[in-house]
Image (cartoon, rainbow, N blue to C red; front, side):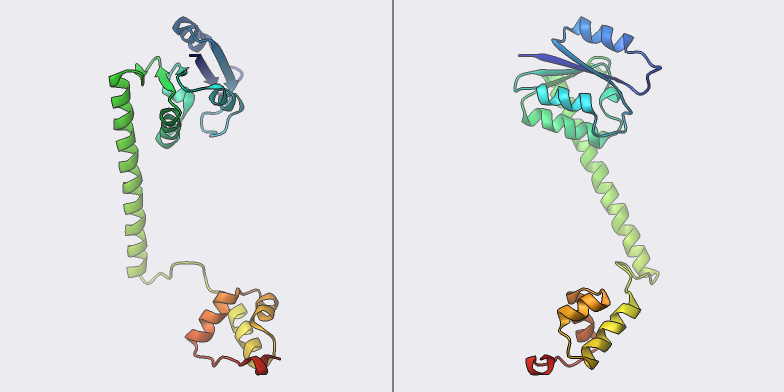
Length: 193
């Protein structure tokens, strides 16, 4: 079982001193460090540290904000650790998922993240409903000129719908949708050729 430490600072002017001291005192076997913003979801040294972990290993950080800036990012990492049977320790936050209290913390954080996602969904749906009630047309805007050009080509030429789609830059399903909507009679194969 290996203990892998990870430390991060945002700029080259910042120092690793307190993080490094705490991680070394904890007894990490391997230490990864990098100068990178916590907002970046992909960080080279973090990826190396995560790739080095094997089932039963322990991943140690100084504080949660050294690993992730947002709850969602942190929870994705913690869920990955749980799936891979990797223990997680945050020294300053007193979190250790190898203990009952640490697992409880993880469960509570997961519940909060789920609630946060549900609240976001509810707000989005409420916003869409309000927009509809105010007469807003949702979805991709209709390119009226292109659609009318496509319908005109359909009615006045012997082009196939696929050819009309290319010529008018309107998708085949959209052409058929508007043909049906405007009740334009469909051509037979003889009329097309």
